[in-house]
Image 1: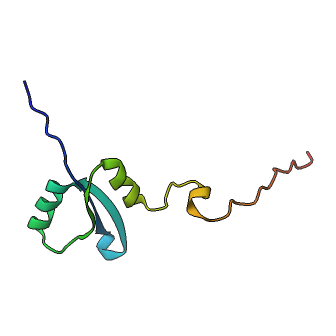
Image 2: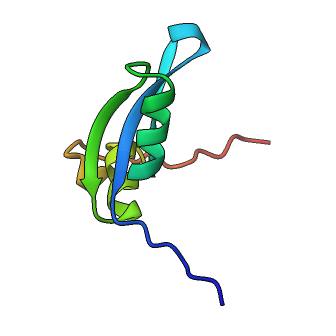
Image 3: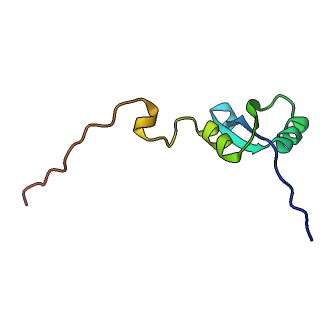
Length: 87
């Protein structure tokens, strides 16, 4: 019988893309982050650590991306009905 490992902590870190032209937030387990940081110290930026669930880490990594308009604090886009053009 195999013993399943349980992740006890998650982290969110930032990586550079395309030679520094952009960035992305990444989620991984704490122990994976420790391996990444040991291999290339200081290359990536740790944003959040010690998160208890992957869902919490994903939410922090996304920021407001994917939120409903009501959750962002902004206004909903104005409703514009589709106009039918004469044929």
